Image (tube, rainbow, N blue to C red):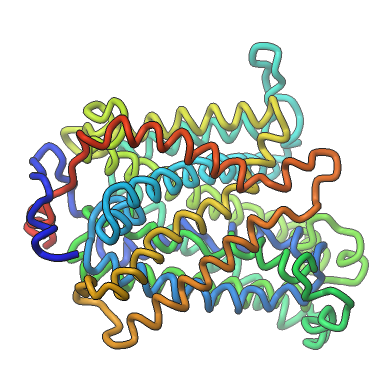
Length: 491
């Protein structure tokens, strides 16, 4: 964007100024917890292993390489525009308010859906740690049976809101603790398995490639690539808290790239150690090969310890998702870009937290969790849309970056790739388009509910239709933050 365009941005008053209390370490920890190696690995491993066998492991390397290019684009964007709201703000600055509004709208709903599904996952782990059957009924709401897993998840929603309102210091402590748990749970257990409990040769990770149709469009390798796409999203979240970070133009590009890179290294190593350690009978019969392998090889105590660490990973990821959801909602409201924007953009007086946005994100998440109990297909729709929603939202700023460089309107920030910037944006765009279509392709999976094969398209179409109506009703009133005001508070 040109400096002339920057000058048209509306004033930002003190009531809409956040506290800059995050450092490089805490912004990295935030993004690290958001991605979460434990969630990234445990969330997809059993399904991917059952679908494609051990050879699916190569997808971690491929998807990491593609996502690293997207992270490079986002690192350039956040260095140029360190504004709260990440994807929404970058797309707006690159190709205009309408483009950015739709990017942020899709991104906001993707995060809220992910927050709800991760809270449900965390509820299951908490239940198992305390020897509770997650699927057992905990309560009845209007004739609807609420499982213990969802009931605990609803409690996590409330506790997360309290932690967020309490202040950024609480978030920083919790995120740092999650990194310790992630390292112990992923790297530590991985080393133990590789050193003393290896059951398979390295050649096992190439065994699937000789299978007929393994690499076809509907073959297991590309299907599991779509699963692995979920493992490497969230690095952009460091930009969601940009106005709460000290020296953001220098700090945030590092946080974006480092969070993705370190999480990827942890996941690549931990997944390989599990694959090489899975006993044959567990590989053939288990629906939860990670837990069953740990229990068989290391004993019940170690498996229970791992579950505690897994729980911490899911809880930290949920908390980062909830924080990010509230920030993008607040960023929208500050720009008069949502109904009831005056209330939603309100900050608490002491901690300067977007308390109304937090409350709304929590309520919407709770409604989604209850609906998932009432209609199992709704939960399937939520799960399927989560990964596709991230990649669809990513397409907006990635395409914007590419077009800005084609049109020669791109002005780099302190962090940039110089002459290589156009090549990075070009390949990142090709990758993001490919991954979105791989994730959203309607493969015949749900024989009894064929419409669920179109989950990503159905959810995206619904959001785009509703979002377009809201945008057109508000567009004449929408403003943008004053970049000079943002710069004045950076240090």
